[in-house]
Image (tube, rainbow, N blue to C red; front, side):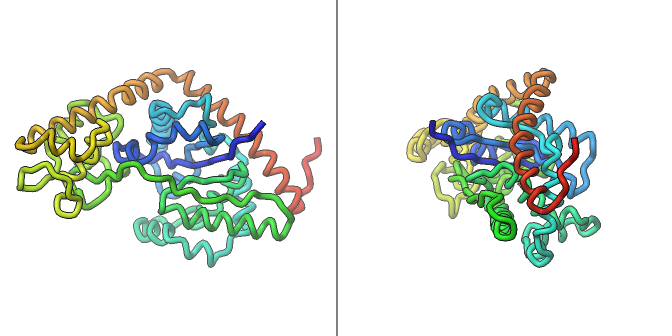
Length: 334
Ligand code: TRP
């Protein structure tokens, strides 16, 4: 039997998923399971490198799990789990901290950015986060790690740590490849089409989340920034707002840009915005309804977490035992 390649990715439970991340990425994830053995975890250990409200973090973690399942990540076909449920992450994270160099960690651009943004809380975790991320990855011996551009440097460091460890102790870790997934649509903020649709700011009028009500969605689209020449034409240089709305409409309806231009020929932006809003409402309706239904079904979500963590722990533990042995820890006496 041919074994599938292993793919693993972590998701930070921070704020609701947006239309932008759905159309740009998550929408395609369900198809990966055909080709790969996929692991996805909610990275709650990583989340606390910046201050979190405990109740919000707990709620957010379960909400995101429900939302990912509603987006098509089938727990029967993918291993979905919560990072803190598999204690091997923290344990290997510590070990790998001892194989990640201060200089390397200092060069991480995300650390520099985040410490600039959180000047009052530049904690050790923020600094050593890439060693934990390396542990997240190497525990499962994956072939591929799909990440956005901003995480590429961390995957490179993971490779360096794996190579260093293998060199010192003999083959232990598979050296993974970063995998920059082909992006679906690149969606920008409705309020500021210069910027991408961000996920973290609350009450951002430029952002549509998967859980927004139809009323909210329509309101956001009616207010979307366009321009003053009242012509629906794709021109991402000069007509960023309109082109962004066309991209969203195309992604929802499957229509091409010329088809959309023809459809709205001679009609104003008012009609166009309504049509885009309605298309988004219909696209998100089943996802929102399914996510809400799942959230009410606590025992189902708990079973998903339990089964996912059990499966993950089995693999993670094998790697951790190997590592503990290699570095010279005395095996536990039974
Ligand atoms: N650092 C990633 C982010 O900020 C999340 C993450 C944590 C991750 N551990 C990972 C991604 C392991 C891929 C693999 O988005």
